[in-house]
Structure formats: C-alpha cells, structure tokens
Length: 496
Image (cartoon, rainbow, N blue to C red):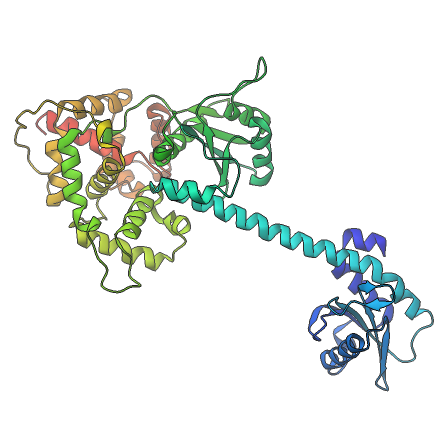
C-alpha cells in the first residue's frame, strides 16, 4: 500500500484494490458523485454501479457511521469514509471509499479496506494540494504575463498597480533579458535566475515562445561579493544549454524597446561560444525623426487614435493600438500574445489597414506603422530636435501608399541619414541579399528565387547577416523594419 501511495497515488491504490477484490473500487463524493474509479476488467463492471455506490455513500453520510455495507444478491458494496471530524464521527464532507466485490466476500477484506483508508486519504489530500498549488502558480504566471503585456503597450501606471500584489517590485530603470532554454525546462531555469540575482528580477514565462523566459532586471548591477558576475552572465554559465540576450538600460516605460533589444542580442548570442550577448549601442529611429517626424506620426495614427467602435463589443482605439503593436512585433504569434483567435486578429488588422489607409501586406507600410507607433511611445523631449530646413522634394516609391510615402520627407533629414549609415555600416557594399530579401517583403522563397540560390542557402546568408548586424532577422521581433527604413533613407539621399 505504501509503495503504491508513493509511486501510483490514488489511481494506483484504486487499481490495486479493484484487482484484490476482483470487482470495482472508487472514491465517491458525499453527494454520490464518483470522483475516481477503477475496475479489474471491463467485464467486472457491476450493473448500475454508479447508482449503487451513490445510494450507499448517501446512507453512510446520513448515519454518520465509520463503515457501511449493502448486499445486492450477487455483489456486496462496502463503504468507508476517508476522514473523521471528531473521534468516532465521520466527516460528512469527506469522500467515501467504495468497493463492490462478488459474493461471498473474501475473508479479511473489511480489515484490508480499513487499513488502506489512511494511505488513500493522504494521497488524496496531497493530490488536492498539488492541484491547488498548480492553480496558484498558473494564476501568478498569468498575472505576471498581464503585467508584462501592460508594460509592452506602455500602460505603466496600470502595470504597477497590478504588480503591487506580486513580488518583487518593478524596478526602474531596467535591463530586459531574454533566456532561451533549449531543453524546454523553463521552471528549472527560472529557479536558477532567482538564485543568481537574489529574487530582484521580474521573471515572466514568454507567452509567445515556449522556450523563452523574460527577465525585467534592475539596470544597476548589484555585486555584493568580490568576483560576482551579473545575473545574465551567471545564468548563461550555470545552465549549459541556454542562450541569453540582454538589452541596454532603459526606463521601465520603454520595456517594449528593451525587449526588442534583448531579442536582437539573443540572435547574436546563438552564434557565440559563451551563449551570451548584450545589445550594442544603437539609437532608436524614433529618437532621430525630430518634431517633423512626430507630427507625421500623429497625422498617420490619428484615424486610429480617434476611432470609436460602432458596437460595444467591437475593439476600441486602445485595443487596436495594442493589436498593431503586438502583430508588428510577433507577426502571427500575436494570437498567443493577445490571447485571441487568428480570425479575430485578421479582422482587427483589416480594420487597422482601412482606418490608416495602409496595405499591411506590404513591408513598406508595415515599417511606416511600426515607426509611427514607436515615435508615439517616445516622450517628446527625447526626440532629437532639428534646425528647420527646406526638405528637398522626394519621389514616392512605386506602389507605396500616400501615408507611407509621406515618410520619405522624414527619412531625408540629416539625423535620420546618419542613423541609417550607422545601421548599414556592417554590411556596406555587400547588402545584395539584404536588399533582395526586403524587396521580396521578407519572404525566403521569392528572395531565394531572385538570388538564384536555394531557400536553405538564403536562410544561411541571413543568419550570417544576423551576426554581422547584431539583429534578429528571421524570427520576430525582427529588425527588418529598421533596415527597410535605413535602406530607403540611403536611397533617397543618393537620389534613388
């Protein structure tokens, strides 16, 4: 009995009892509901066993006795409560052990059942507590995920209110760290993370990638002991099959930017022997567009920001903004991030495209919307001011929508051109693969056909470019929007 209690639990004990009694064994609730059951064979099932045990359990509960039996002619049903509320008094809320065995009843069976009550009761309590623990863990995990979602969509005040019931407190400023667990054991890696930084980081299981953990860490590195290493480096060293990417220090309100940076660093870390990388210094394009870029972003997004749904159940402007931000970051995985059906996501994207006059199937329009959303999320004083100067007339790209085409005047500004040169410097003079891939809307098949090589060959080239550029290209969040903007800025400055 005790061996089965340790290894098989309630189910193992009931199967063993069914075999020993050559009949049926189960646990029945006070209302007669069968909670768990096992039978020796399919043929051993007693006719109307559910009704028989329900009647017997009800009689046991009503009488308040510690044992009860019912004879039906061919079978005998024995009942024992699994708990007592006082010495000698059965607990009316406790489940009942019920056994139905062929007559005549085997000698010593009643004593055997009395002996199995204690281990069976302990197993049932342990399993109930484990289920409650899992529900609590799931609730906490969903709560942390909700806080991360609020941070990613810029709702800082609400995120801090929700996070107040959990620990630790949200730090500010932060570094965002993404840990990729190749073994898939996120719970064990999460424990390593807690041990590495003393529980100072906010740890969230990524809702999009099942092998990722997201850490929102204090930006300042606490080194209480000589020779101590930062949390991200410690995790990479202790977990032999994980990869770690870390962002620059960012304000808590810019957690979404920190996440993108950490994800790009993760793409670089996969190719490094130490499996660890920190995001290289690189300005966000939203910081260099200047006041003119902010006005352009406000004009582009205005139909979305002022949208009023026709029906109460339709998504409002904030919901559509969150949808656009999530889709641009995670592509089709946005369904996991937003917890919506793919048809719901497609319907929202159609509405967003109609409101903004954009074709969201085109990379040019996606890049324009992504930049506008990032500019809107950037505090106005952080935008680089520019001396007003007459902008040269620029041609719109063929097939580009008016809203996205108006972006060309912003991309011609000197600060943006400097940013573009910095982005493309690692691949200067060797950007054919990158240009072709972006011209083909970021799709591998058409890019491979245009380059005249295989799809795996194209993928390998882009993987090498990820290492050179220190950005993720093939997996969202991808740097393709920034790279499209950078190439467009350079082409415009060259008169292309």
